[in-house]
Image (spheres, helix red, strand yellow):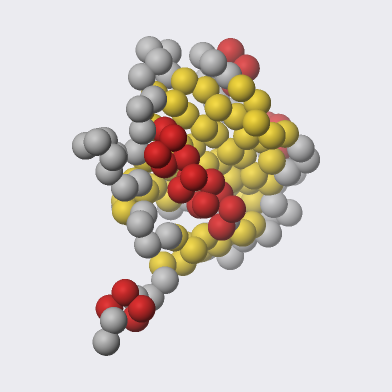
Length: 145
């Protein structure tokens, strides 16, 4: 029997079933610090491991999508090397680097009918290109209601 073929898929769901993610086999899932968070690392490349976090909040009358996006300590546009990738009614995606230039990061905000989701990918500048397609794979697999 082929163990790989018999392996069950790991499906992440929030407690209200508004978010679902089929976690890729290559992802190393890390125990999250909070109930509304998912963390994983990417395959090692040149002895460096990249990581991502995803967190979500349920939509409410007092929290708009723009409020959720703007919760960070500093405006996104002021971050080093900020570059907008996509912006529409349900998605806000941008790239930036750390202050010291060592890390490349990408943030994606998603809006569902009942939930808001933030996904952040962090990599060294030398490993970003190696794992960005894996990050995009995860983002495409997220289903939100």
